[in-house]
Image (cartoon, rainbow, N blue to C red; front, side, top):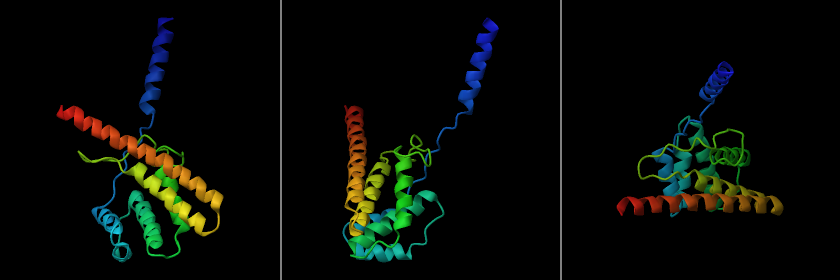
Length: 174
């Protein structure tokens, strides 16, 4: 009986050791972060900067650039010409925040530096919002509303992260 328990414990241990732990995702490049910051005050200049951006090969930055492209096209009164790429970005950011299974990275998170908060839920919310704008522009009101609901859910996740970070700073200071 003891031998069976030892064998079962060994098998459970081996299975646990073989379980794949999601790897953290690399964050955005400083160039994309600068374009994102510029977008809020000068969307025309940000669009020009994004068009000149050469990018890097990481999956995260590819999808982040597609999100920025859609947002900047909208902010500059152009039609979204990258709808399929934007929808891939929506699925990618959803997988990072654990909403959908395609990439299975829900618990992998985002590599953050000290005093930096994970922006992924905010990017997922933005991706859903701008995807909803595209649906609305194509007269698909029901799909647009669905995207806006996803935006609200991801916004709440981001607010919880911000609240937790604030509480941790208060706790550390006190």
